[in-house]
Amino acid sequence: MDDLEVLRREFEAEDGSFLLRLRGDLHWDRQAFGRLERAMRRVCARYEAEERLDRWLVDGYWFLADFVPGWTGHPNFPRPEPEYYEAALERLHDLQNWFVTGRSPYTDTHVWPDL
Image 1 (tube, rainbow, N blue to C red):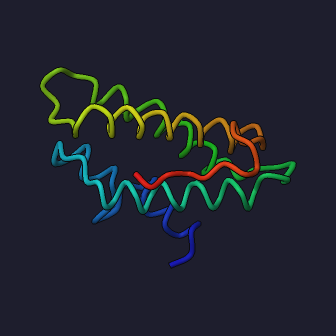
Image 2 (cartoon, rainbow, N blue to C red; image 1 turned 60 degrees about the vertical axis):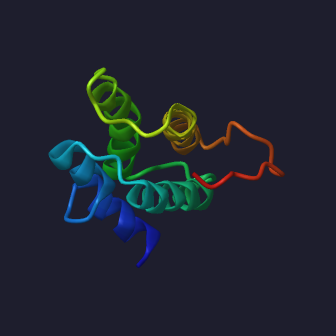
Image 3 (spheres, rainbow, N blue to C red; image 1 turned 90 degrees about the horizontal axis):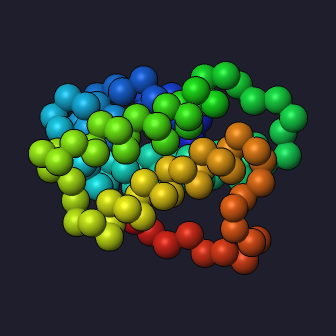
């Protein structure tokens, strides 16, 4: 599946998406998050030099970076282990920043560790 299609499905919280599982089931699906995060990263790289961005993409990146920490920040939310959770939230913020500004917060040689 094309990365833009993955993001469209994720941002619209379709069946099997990270966002649907997070909101509807109160479950952090690591596999779905990994799929979402990798697609977001590849789209950032693909759109890095673009002067204009589609609003649905900007909205999606912005929403995830704001919504996920707020939704999962409740003390009773069943979060994954703290190190992974904090790294995932940081990744969403970094990807939001990269997509909107067109500049990665890291050097070109940075290796993004799998989450």
